[in-house]
Length: 109
DNA sequence: CTGTTGACAACCT
DNA sequence: AAGGTTGCCAACA
Image 1 (cartoon, helix red, strand yellow):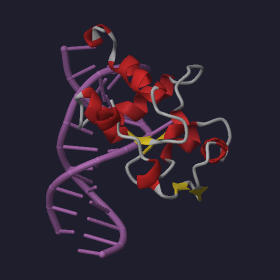
Image 2: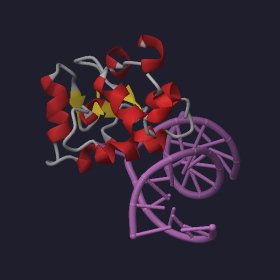
Image 3: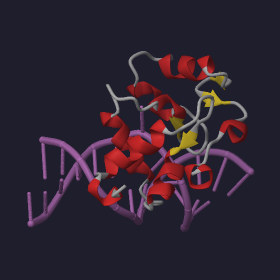
Image 4: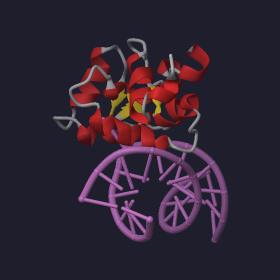
């Protein structure tokens, strides 16, 4: 696969789609996997175009395990409910046992 | 082409 | 240790 052909956004989508069920990852982890460790913000920004795509943006949170991007979802607690639907405990936009459900693309891939 | 923005992360006080 | 500020880097106006 010629990654160079794909835009930065597309790479983020590809990685996000590969997030296993019941797992989550951080923006920095994805950015690190893409070689843009300092571009964690870009990952989040890329998610702006994830609407209407297969990208499970609700599985992507910041390094604290906090659902910072929930405000971008349709509802207010939609993101949280989606994660809880996958067996992830989320309390007050904070993922419980974050280290347990954390999925690092750089290690898993 | 230059400046601003942004779903973060790291550094500094 | 906890909180606030700066830095990154690519997209967008």
